[in-house]
Amino acid sequence: MDLTVQTTAQRLKVIAVMPAYNAEATLRKTWEDIPPGSVDEVIVVDDASGDRTVEVARSLGLTVISHPMTRGYGGNQKTCYDEALKRGADLIIMIHPDYQYDSRLIPLMTGFIEAGVCDVMLGNRIRTRREALTCGMPLWKYVANRALTMLENVVLGQNLGEFHSGFRAYSRRVLEMIPYHANSDDFVFDQQFLVQAIHFGFRVGDVPVPVRYLREASSINVSRSLTYGVQTLLTLGRWLLHRAGVRHDPLFVAR
Image (tube, rainbow, N blue to C red; front, top):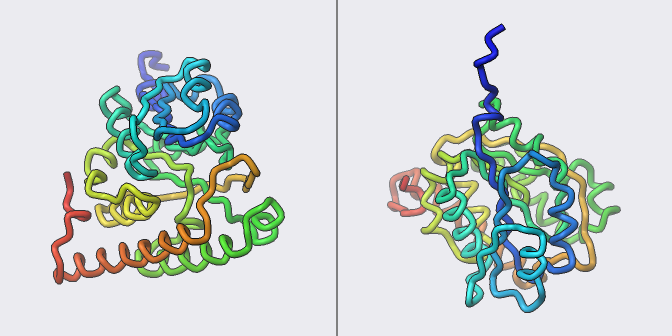
């Protein structure tokens, strides 16, 4: 047996990024559930929170970057990914610090990328309708999630359980190719990113994760959700027009 051979996991530097906004009540719990040794560094980017998010993150010894002014959810992620790349990440985990997602599953998410099976991994909260609704997902959010996911699967030729997850893993080359700075600073950033990943031919997969809707967790309201839904449809339209050669769109031009 050749003892000089190293596994992929030993060679890769894994960085978890947390786009945070008023996450004081849930940040610690999210961080404490990360399995020891599964990530090399955790970066918290605080988007000018009005609570003690920064103080909590620093007390945990995490790397903290603070925006002096609110840049929005998408703007926050741009800082997250810029910093992760700058720090030499080979594999990047994005998880919301609102405890809606189970960070114990990080090794499973990264494992598919480390094994060369996928380039992008998503946490899928929708295993069954009963589980999603029983665990607190509002009915209107469930219906919207299912409708948009079904449409996106058909248009983009995918078979994902959920397109609207805040728990994701990317290989470094995904972030190096996708022009994410051209994306929105709002919530539709996530959808633009996934459409871009599919456009550039990256392999996208998902794993089941528990549904957790907590009173203290952040969530967008009905009005913002409607805007998000419309912007998601517009993103699909932009991609179709670009693919057909009708409109040259900077969202789909590699960095």
